[in-house]
Image (cartoon, rainbow, N blue to C red; front, side, top):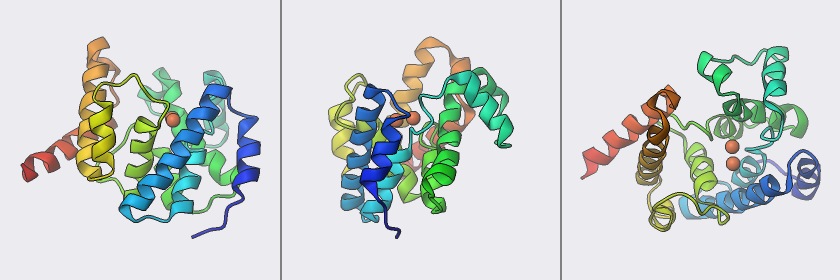
Length: 196
Ligand code: FE
Ligand code: FE
């Protein structure tokens, strides 16, 4: 457990995010804290992960690619075509380099907050889910149900969110889905089936 100066971190972060992204970030930060209370994780660590999860979101896509190059962050072919995805990896880089976060669990939760993955850690699930359910979110279907499950069962909640996310992405074009997300869905679907 680390000590954080949240006031200082928030002030700094607000310079790099537009108003909407900053408000979303506050929502995610406090939702992470609430989920940590419900599921037994260090509240401040969860809050720090939520605060910094989108720290790279407002960097222009070209610059995202350039920064990955400069800092030797690997970029997949899929990420080259969908550079917005890189805000997750770059966010972890910024959290470490600019905000002094050393906790690998926090850095990994930031790294996987967009795609999810198989067998996620408690904090990875908390950040992924908080990003989806924070109070300002309203577009996704099933939000009331998903918000309720989030405070009861994180694995079941991952299954519901990944299912809806893939269905939504498939509406456009099946090619547009990151394999990590598909893989995550299959993992949580399997858990779901084993239970019911
Ligand atoms: Fe994000
Ligand atoms: Fe976000």
